[in-house]
Image (cartoon, rainbow, N blue to C red; front, side, top):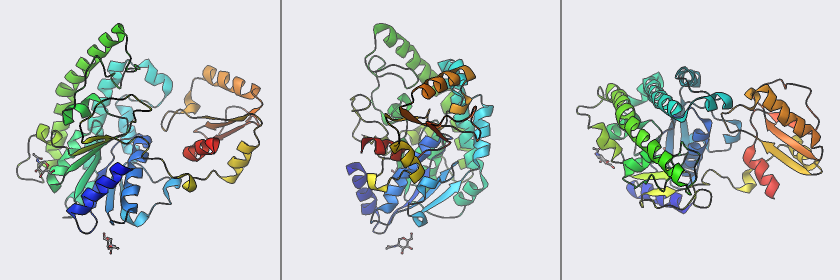
Length: 369
Ligand SMILES: *[C@@H]1O[C@H](CO)[C@@H](O)[C@H](O)[C@H]1NC(C)=O
Ligand SMILES: *[C@@H]1O[C@H](CO)[C@@H](O)[C@H](O)[C@H]1NC(C)=O
């Protein structure tokens, strides 16, 4: 939180009244949005009277209603379009299909999906209207994950950029900031390795990082550059080289923590802010019917979710029946299962509750309190 205070202080010094912040969270992954949105909520909640314009493909969830709404203006890109684009690019949210693709295939598809995603976002009528409205901003906060073309906003408005990285640092972010990343020490985000790699894993990691570097330079940069030029050339007289923009970032807020990940060195303007999205326990509430279901469990509660996007309901049926078989036999436990469709595949066992979106933080908080 100290870092947030520093950021607020900086914004405060540059403007006697609150700063007008433009935040762009282009990712189709809801978890990215939730992380970024918490940062905005904390920024507008301070005494400095900052205001935020937030562009994203996500709708405000029920859990977010408590925030002081008047200071966050949300511009929502039709998520159906972006989602469809994501699927059209061969990306999937199904666990099995994700595993069926090789790391390299998935990675290459992701680069193209990222570019078309940003292109659609910048083409959106509401975004175009904002760009030509004459409104001025003081700061750009952007989720920089395969979305570098968005840095055109910083140049257009003449403002500093804060990059946020909800998935932790990666080789691209390190590269933009000039932070060292060593293939023998730092595992790629796309490989399931820890920092303690065997020789064989280090070799694989070296190959992967070479692949990341090549595809970044030859596919990613070129495709983002064309999106950047086509959208911003019409707005400014002389567009700077796009590589110069990506080397001109002021601050990175990285969603990791040495206690959860591993301790590693970062430049002083790259801050690890893992846990930033967590709320005060007093603000968290489990709905009454869920609370009584949890309290009634003789042995405890097991909460199962595969994350914001991956659908439990789409697991292959033999895996599901194995899970359910085990769950129904563990009578002393009660299960809360993230389940995305209306219908359950069989009569719902009485030690199980399903929901497409749980108040996860409150549930986990309940278990430690
Ligand atoms: C906060 O900023 C808004 C405009 O963004 C302004 O209308 C309002 O008066 C400000 N409030 C305070 C307490 O400065
Ligand atoms: C770099 O960022 C600063 C603001 O932090 C801005 O004044 C300057 O024009 C930017 N340079 C380029 C090439 O974007």
